[in-house]
Length: 96
Image (tube, rainbow, N blue to C red; front, side):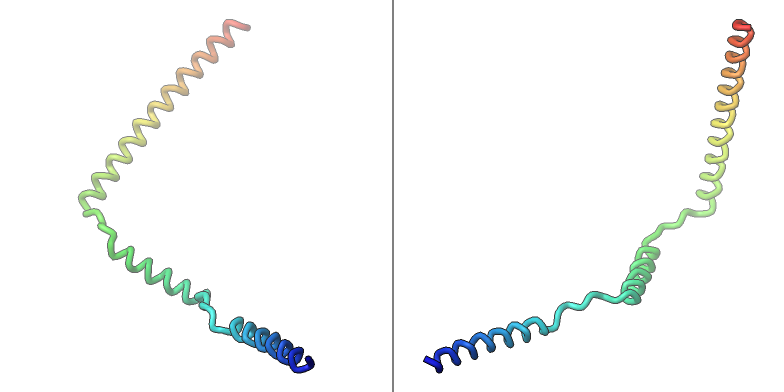
């Protein structure tokens, strides 16, 4: 009977040791901070190579269009401001 208990105890201890060994098995390492930064720069360089840059003529053309649109919107807002100001003055004159 004592041997059965010893065998059971040994078996239990063996399982505990095997479990500890399994826990110590090499796990997948997470990449460190610097390896993540290095990967980010490699990806950045890879993506930068895919960029299609506009020609000088396209840049000048797009800049001119943007400036023209800004002037038109500015004039429209100034016109609205002037109109609403006139309406406000008219209402103030009528109520006074």
